[in-house]
Image 1 (cartoon, rainbow, N blue to C red):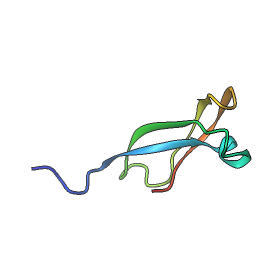
Image 2 (cartoon, rainbow, N blue to C red):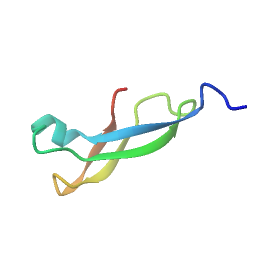
Image 3 (cartoon, one colour):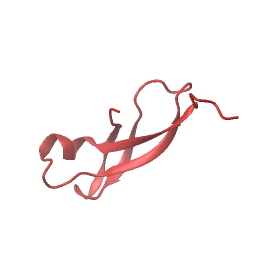
Image 4 (cartoon, rainbow, N blue to C red):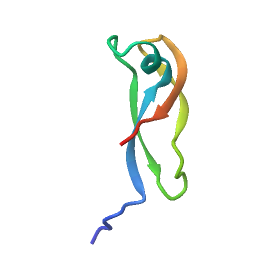
Length: 63
């Protein structure tokens, strides 16, 4: 049997620059998995944004 509350969850990372400036041009989103027990805080990482054409900080979206 599988557990109801799995420790690993799928999350979405969104570009902080694109969401702050303009939502009509689109935004860069990545999906990844994290362990809820090891990292209870929101995840941040530097990823390449296709809208900004540079590496920017991507933060975890709200559910």
